[in-house]
Length: 92
Image 1: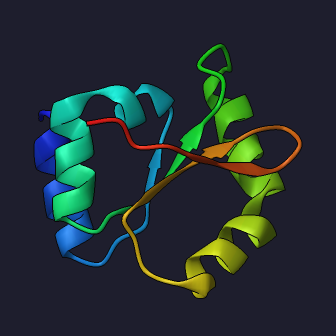
Image 2: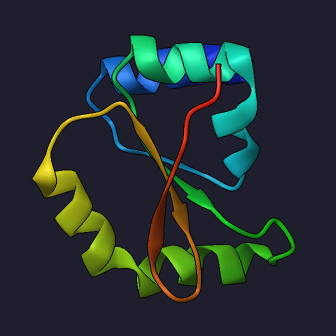
């Protein structure tokens, strides 16, 4: 499934999106999909992690992620690092 499709579909269902691809914030088609769907997306800062490490990274930042979700609606893409969260500028 193309990124633009799952972004649209999942965000349309009110889901918070988790991805290992922070480059979504730089690709025009994906950015348009994030903006159009008012998506709330959290993207791992590193794609050099194993599956288990990826899951643990999200779990380690869970409280910060939940706080950001509670602060308001999208659209946004937030980078999830080992040290916390950082908002990514959406480039169209």
